[in-house]
Length: 114
Length: 116
Image 1 (cartoon, rainbow over the protein chains, first blue to last red):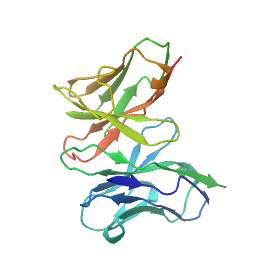
Image 2: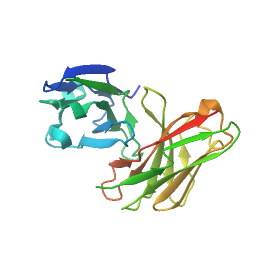
Image 3: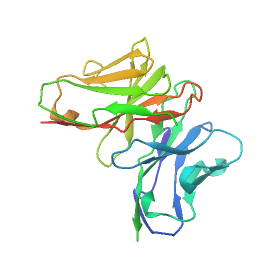
Image 4: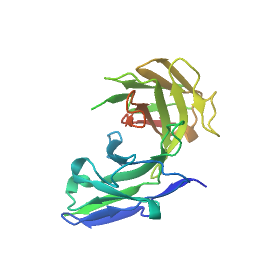
């Protein structure tokens, strides 16, 4: 079945440490790929997206993600985490260009230790 | 950037009453808006696609008579939870599709519904 998988439910990192959040998808063709962040009391904010072209994409707040077709992955990274990065992170895809609706992964909750 | 406003942010109602949630795109026109539902510590599940001037398209398992969607203008979509019951308590989130960058959605802050 077509799906988006985020294997890590909860991750804790120390402030200043590097971060990688995993995302895998299972679709026949390469979908459009997104990472969103959800903070309490705020709407989902788009961090970055991949449609085509360069497989390493830069986003806001110092985040980047790399699309790897061979692994069907789109992992999110940040070289140095800040306490304000603590939030819920969702990987999402648009699997069918005609439908346009997003399909979300289950989310990864990031906790940042001082 | 594009802003989507969702109102109210939190509502408590009695069982059997109806609740209306508004989703507005403030600085762009959206022919398509989406309604999602999020249970605690879970992901967002698409409920329906709202198209301006036409009937909404509901996902399998979503009762269209219970979750009424109206998209009467290019900047406003409403979700009405009719005859609400405690099991309808959830976090409801809307999004609006950008008119030019059609694969990008902008999200409202969500509405927490608690049905007593």
